[in-house]
Length: 77
Image 1 (cartoon, rainbow, N blue to C red):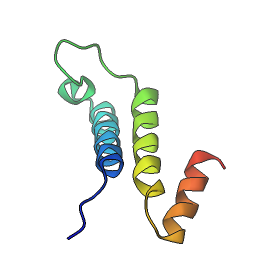
Image 2 (cartoon, rainbow, N blue to C red; image 1 turned 60 degrees about the vertical axis):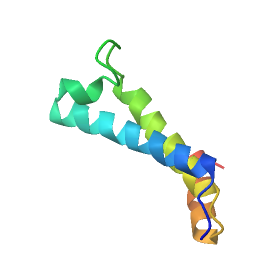
Image 3 (cartoon, rainbow, N blue to C red; image 1 turned 45 degrees about the horizontal axis):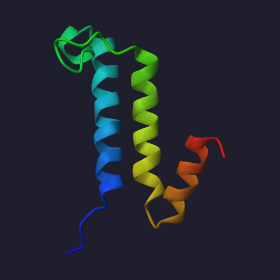
Image 4 (cartoon, one colour; image 1 turned 30 degrees about the horizontal axis):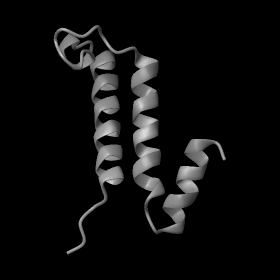
């Protein structure tokens, strides 16, 4: 069985972190907006950039053409 690459795993984690913070802003849950309790809250735009960058990193490493096209659209190129 082939293991996923480190970049794909980190991209997925980055996307999940961004998505979790975005949900925290939408649902107004302070615990989701802060990555750690002692950190200041993450700004919505930063969380959005985390989610997009994580998706682009995870999808870019795929072999499928559809995924590569999706990544190009996300990245603006």
